[in-house]
Image (cartoon, rainbow, N blue to C red):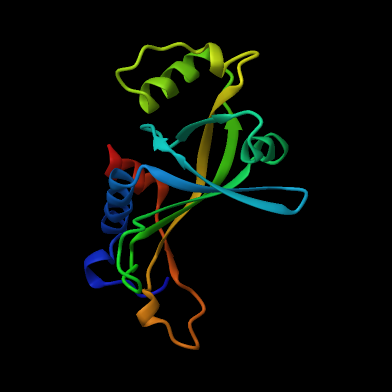
Length: 172
């Protein structure tokens, strides 16, 4: 493991820091690929209690087409307003598998999470609708653990693993 500040050296502390990033950043960059062509797009992605991330997109969007062909995704959450070189423990990386939500009950839960207080009309999100909800299930998580100012020519690793179970507990 890469050295991290003493205040974040424990698994619960790293998980709490990752949870704080999720609480304060609604937008994720979701990287997808198809036929060896990468694509990255920003979406509002919100986790449920199991740490599954939901967002809505048009089925014709490049990232939606990529997910249909290849469910492997990589998400990043970070504060883009921070000063350059001050990003230590400020970016959460999630590697996972994404899928289209097809079950009406799960689509309803995704709608309520993403559009709280709005009436639920799933017509556009199921069947012949032009939009879908998508769900990414993280397989691994990391926080960056070095700021730009701390890098040296010999630096090889700039992330530290975050336990998904500990992150779920921190978000509960």
